[in-house]
Amino acid sequence: MKVVLQNLTKKFPGRGKKSEDVVAVDNFNFEIPDGKLVGLLGPSGCGKSTTLNLLCGLLKPTSGKVFFGEDDVTDLPAENRGVGMVFQNYALYPHLTVRQNIIFPLQNLKGKDKMSKEEMGKKALEVAKLVQIDELMDRKPKELSGGQQQRVAIARALVKRPRVLLLDEPLSNLDARLRLQTREEIRRIQRETGITTVFVTHDQEEAMSISDMIVVMRAGVVQQIGKPQNVYDDPVNLFVAKFLGTPPINVFYGRIKDGGLYIGDGKIADAAGVPDQDVYAAVRPEGFILDDNGPLCCGLSRVEIMGRDISVVSTHDSAENPVIRSIISSESNVNTQSPEVRFSVKPNKLFVFSGQTEDRIRIN
Image (cartoon, rainbow, N blue to C red; front, side, top):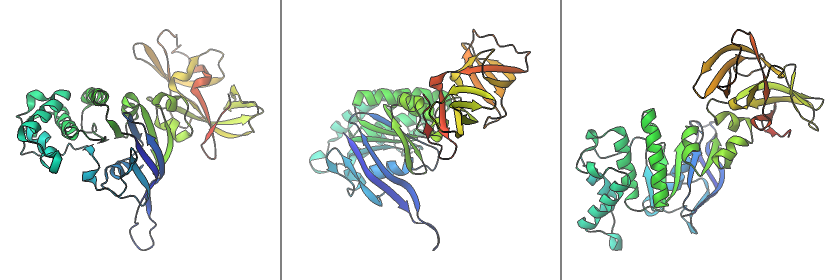
């Protein structure tokens, strides 16, 4: 099911007579292709959960439209949209068994869609096997782990074969290992069912690892849309560059002068044809090359051995943050007795942004 958001805007009234309206989602335009998993990504308060609630019908937009396929569902009640919703807190009924929790949405079907007990039981078992909880059908939620409860919530959303599946930070309450396992399961389930899925998260690693496309949001405004790797490799502004990546990108206060990009006194790259101006120069951690004659001279703090890689922790007077983290090959030989370390920079891992607007400036 293709989903189209057309000029979607949601404003909440401000508190007090003189308070301005709060724009939670601002003129959102996007087409979610049929059968794809799209990650809505951004910091808390950016509007991603509000967007999800507009999609499922829990909120009505201030303006704009929502289409499922060719159908305008903007004014359609939530119960008639054919969506499955999975919440952060699972929202299971504690007094019901796993089987009863899964069957619950089917009990509300009426008319031609109404099912017999046998049909509901068969459907419940099918989705339970899909999410690998078919051996837990007679347990109650308190007898399950967090990951198992989340699978029950997913099964309950899938049992009525929704047109669209919406996941609102479904992994936030799980520990790190379980998060990794469950996100892989979500991806597997989505591929097997082919249901168009929207996955809301503030964790960029989650979004990048399982999404076909990601939408990066900030303060209700879409910043960039694209395939995860493309957005990582080609950010349109400083916010996107800083939000994606672990460890985070290293940002320096730089200057374009006489056709060159300078960080401090070192000319890091050519910038022919770009007007002289103050800029932000951002380098991905994997973008540093250990080079005794490199133009970027940093104060060496320490070297961390990480197995296949080495993390060089250093400082620079022009760095936005006190710590610069560079990831280099474990075969590199860093002189830990030296007070400084020099780098050259990989051109494809170097990004330049306007010092005023923070928009991308392309120098190569």
